Length: 616
Image (spheres, rainbow, N blue to C red):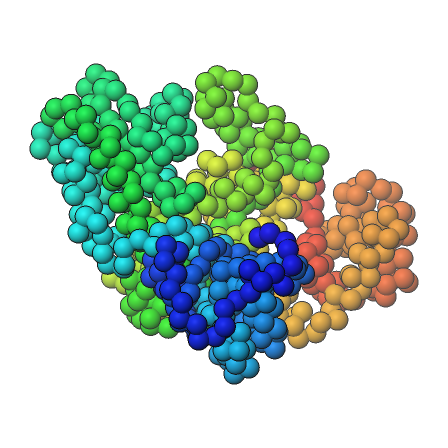
């Protein structure tokens, strides 16, 4: 958005009630019909819905700007807030055609509707299931075709968004076998052939996407770069048993919606095929746009339904949106990663070393024998985690029955429906998915932690399973941290409540005690603060002493200090922090305090040696 004075006469909004016609310009009505009608609610249009729209922008109260004819998004404002009328009036002074705000719980404030009428600025609210970034993309893409055919109409006579029918119609126009693909080379629709598909087209259609080896060829030859950077038709000559092909990108403004491929069907493509395919790209744009809108709407609606069910605000309609009934048993799986690399970049666990080496080998193969990446060249841990969780989300969606994923910061939750006919098999199916998710995360170069919650009899009880999964995940995190610190054997990667029962019960007890008596870990908090400020090691001393059940010689050996040094530290714990460790109640509260603060007692060295001997 350009920055200029909003008092310029050419940017002054028209007066309310104006019915001026705007030939050749997209209108608000056209934008809503083709781009975001299902993601927006029109609350007020004082000048009618045929006002011209020239762009999409984001409202910024800190700028003096001109926004003539723009639809301005105000993400931080809801329609019931006191600031909404001020935002709307400021946007109107800048010349905005419409303003989009959040939908508030109390509905639009009467004063906001009054300001809309006074300024002549349209007012809309965003549906809660669509993200602001998604909405901006939908509006900008829709704006490029807002002046196209009305909803439901198409120059080919094909219903808008009916891609299989469009592929058949374009096949007749171009004179070849048509495949319509999205920007990721996934097949959206295809036309039948009269003389049989060549092997490449058959493999593409059966796999519902272009084979990886073919994408590698097209990338290496520069074909895809040319395709996505031009509006012209690109030619691929026949190669052995693969017939010749023409391809063209389909765009809405600057945004790529997909591509159309025409393959020779029994005879060479005719000379007019290039021009026909170029026209086909223009014809296909509103169809792909409508298809994407429907896909985005359905995906966002499912995402909102999953979130509602997991947070306990869902109902039978939320379950139905996922293809579930109100009585479908379900379980929640929770996935995250554990850091394989320390802050200094050194691998700290055996699994981490194996994962690092596997990824390096894979990267070397991907670069045709080039050297493996060093730690400095690899992506940041957060990037690796994000990629791993995205791939795990896809794995859950591809599972049968379909898992319904929901991403949170650093974690993925999956709502998995279960069969009610064979509970043992249902439990086994959930465990199989958990193992697949762990393998997917590991293949992405991260170290997985996957927790299964307790199965529940209906989607309405999904929050209980989610809470259970999160507690199990916390136990797995704690064990992973201790294993890395103590050099212990690698802990579990996949677990449910039965796998970690004792630790889980202890964790629940800590949570309950913390809620009932918040001061239980007061001395421990003071202890940790003292260590942080003075560089002492009293908290580790306390943890080691408790883990040894008060054995002074054994604790001293564990800490590599003289027994008298340990006795001095224990006296300080008594005199400085009031911890009488001869009192069993104080010892219990001290250990609960350590656990509540995330400091579990260390595993004694002789116990670690014993475990290592058993594992060897």
